[in-house]
Amino acid sequence: MIDILSYGFFFLTVALTYGIICLGLNVQWGQTGLFNVGIAGFVAIGAYVSALLTTPASTSHIGGLGLPIAAGWIGAALATALATFLIGALTIRLRSDYLAIATFGAAVAIQLCVLNLQPVTGGPFGIGFIPRPFAGLARQPFLFGAVNLAIIAAVVVVLYLGLERLASSPWGRALKAIREDEAAATALGKSAVRFRLQAFALGGAIMGLAGAAQAHFIGFIAPDNYQPTLTFQVWAMLIVGGSGNNRGAILGSVVVWGIWALSAVAISAVVPADAQARAASLQIVMIGVALCAILLWRPRGLIGEARVASRHILRPSVARRSSNSSSEH
Image (cartoon, rainbow, N blue to C red; front, side):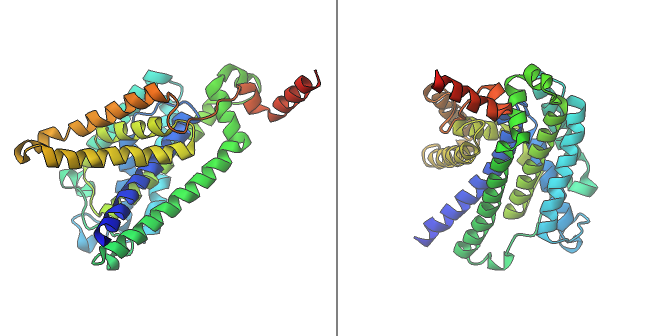
């Protein structure tokens, strides 16, 4: 029973770290309409920055600073926010597939930098011995898993509440208005470029925080961890859960990661051992099938966003006046 609970803690911890990435993507795509396909690169920035800040030089082949884990997480979020701001400043005026190509190119460039800057990042060998929260409990898997799950769950709750407040604030309503009707929002004095850039940087900061959390939970990172498969997983999670809805982003991460984990178990049970490495690609196929099923059954995801007319998003008082006048008539 304890082993099952320990695995449950591990499963939920990993799923919720993906949920943090989904929350960042939801800010960029769900609320702003920015087609970011560079997720893996931004997560990698957060993971490597936090690892470099917190890993002691005495325990690793790279020259880490040995700072507290909290400092690493904050530094990861700030560094990724700066990187996404600079990338966004160059690409934010692009639309749809053009922005996707630009962000994908940025992610590939980030991975190549990580792979080739071996004195700093460890190159293909990665960075090991990354400090783990409450590492003294590692010999007690049940307690260690419960503590790590509590930490990640607390981060998710804080992010969720903060993003919900932002979404209902004038800033959040302006993002949705720009997404729905940029011309109308611009006519009302809203700078589409400035709001998009802010949302892009905020989403990137959240992705960097998630990368740092994953790095410290696993204790090891390498360039192979940040392949385009990661981007595909996160997009599938957001679409399955419901784009534009923060609860949907968290739910989608748990559902899709469950499909990923169950398909891995099924492959190991059915496929011969010498073919399991090649059969691992079936996990992506299973997620693709689930994605198609959700799009056919619930096009807006399991918990889709309730769409509102853009003029009512910017001016809630207009909606109230309209409803009052219609009731009078």
